[in-house]
Structure formats: structure tokens, C-alpha cells
Length: 287
Image (cartoon, rainbow, N blue to C red; front, side, top):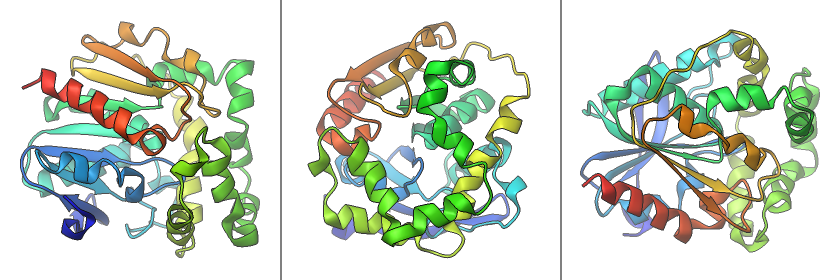
């Protein structure tokens, strides 16, 4: 299948409108992107899985062509989870295969815990289990890697710096972190710059981080997740240490992890063939 058969649409959920791209028919395969991305980060997965699934890649609230609530309080996990539930229901499904990367991975973990009966299988790319993430942010090693989270707490300055020199920082984030820089073409970089140049996107996206510490300060006891779960992890992630994956099996009843060597945080974009194959193998187990 080609891009020509991709469809753009909007769905109303949780009081806002979310833009999404879809292709194919069948069971729902729902894709959640991270920062600083939008639906486009799944460009290699959408056509690959549209032969067997209804693939839906949404723009998370605040991103690209989705609504961008003004209040900082609108960017908390409880709202993200409601967004996803509304998308699944609004598309006419009562369950899905849920796939998330980075912030999308954080949302996917939380949704699977909140509504396990709505998730047939969970696939998380380069985002640790929330308990491991919270614990990691208390270690010097991970704090150094996550310096940008503290920087994003500042008002206005992060927005100005990211916009500076035609969003040069976005290009540096993708190509600078990538092991294989050719994974990001000039066209890809322009797509990300154009998405973030839209009104209010930068502040909305940064609000995810500006609410992070308040949410992490709330003590939570994570139980055993019963949803079959695959974690895919690019080993050379400059933002999230590989050690954050250790011990995940204690939180997930049916868990497997696959490491992708010589690959950065942008695993599904940098090594799409490998990621797609790992996903197919995992999804094939459920057939």
C-alpha cells in the first residue's frame, strides 16, 4: 500500500478534536507518537500494517493539526488516557492493539493499566515502565540524560530556543541523536519543522513536560499488567538509559523485550524494517 491511500480525518474525543491518519481495514492498530513528533513518525509503519489492520496514527492533543487547549492543566495523563479511550470508541471499536513511542509510550502504558480489557496487545518503543521511569529520574545517571526536562520547566525560553534559526534544534534532535542520520531526509526534517511552526504547538507540547514532576510526585502502586506486552528498545538512546528496561518483567505478566543495536531513541524511524518485523512476530503470536 502507498501513501496515496492514506486518509486524513478528525475525531471528537474528550471535548477536543484530534487529527489522525488512517489506512487499511480490520482490527484497530492505534499508534501514539512522542516528542517532538506527530503522526508522521509512523510513516514507515502505517502502510506496512494496513494490509491486515485498520491503522490509525493520531496527532496527540496539542500537536500538529489536533486541538491545542490553552490551559497547562489540560496536559496531564488523565486527559491523555481519556483521549485514547474516546478515539477507540469513536472509531467503532471496543479494543485495539496499542503502540506508543516516547510520550506515546507513557500514555500507552497508562491506558493499558486503566483499561486492560480494551487492549489486546501492547507495544512500547523506547519508553520504560512508568515505575522504572520515576525511579530513574532519581538517579544521577538518568538525570544527566534528562537535563532537557528541567530546562523545559522554564517559561518562554524553551519556545524561543527551539524556534531559533528555523527550528534548528529539531533537526539536531533527530539527526544529532540518530546513529544513522540518513534515516531522516531533508523532507522529513521539513515536515517536523512545519508541524511545530503551527500556532501554539510548541507551548502545548512543552506543557506535557511542565506537568510531569507534579504527576510523578503522586505516589502510585503499579500492579501486574495482564496485557501481553512487547518492548522494543533502540540501544543507543541518548535520552533514556537502557538500564531503565531492567526489571520490567516484574510489572507485566506476559512480557518480552527486544533490543535493537546501533539504533537511537528514534527506533521506528531509524530501523523501520527491524521494528516492523519485531511487531509482526509479536502480533502473529496472538493469531
